Image 1 (spheres, rainbow, N blue to C red):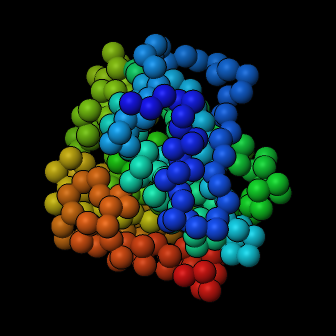
Image 2 (cartoon, rainbow, N blue to C red; image 1 turned 180 degrees about the vertical axis):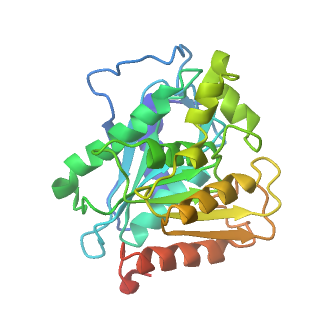
Length: 296
């Protein structure tokens, strides 16, 4: 396994080739002075050889900025999935950041602290990440009104939680939700709920609080949902319920359900609709005015 101090070197190495000529990634601490709440994890933070980050007890941003010549000003903060017990840093983090960077969109991976039963911790990290990005907008060549958040699986729950529980300073401008966990109710992913809520996993108030389909308003950011019909881990009903709530509230949303693919395909080229989902995403971002058509 690879320890935390070696993480940035690995991120840089993995970027060589796929993002040739692009700026090298760098790291920003989310809580440089220490976070207010500790998640209680004592084991060493590590990135496994399979690309999963485990025991995350500090929050960091891995920043992939595009070259100035292609920079669109848009940015996506990326929340990898992993059931709130680990983070799929490679195919739901690094590869996506590289993909965005190449097209002129800043890709910023959020290595959020795992909740370990401390349910407020991941949301605090995501909210602070948005504030940090906007605070560095001029320095990083980012448009403050083009700050989006993306999430895969449990990371999709985190992204949609921020999209429905934001403050004025932390509201994302758009959401990209890949096969997301959305609800803590009937169609939830039990592992994600249990890891998020811990000893309070049966607390009705917390279940309602983190069932994000219940908290959609007219001010919820627009969203693109991408998922597979045969997902057995996170039922498509998660996305469908939130999409329906957004349409009822008059919020722009688009959803594409692929016939096959199951769960967790991320940026894996083996996914049958690998090219299709990228095309759909770039088209949606263009239609929303987040990027220009020349970027595609």
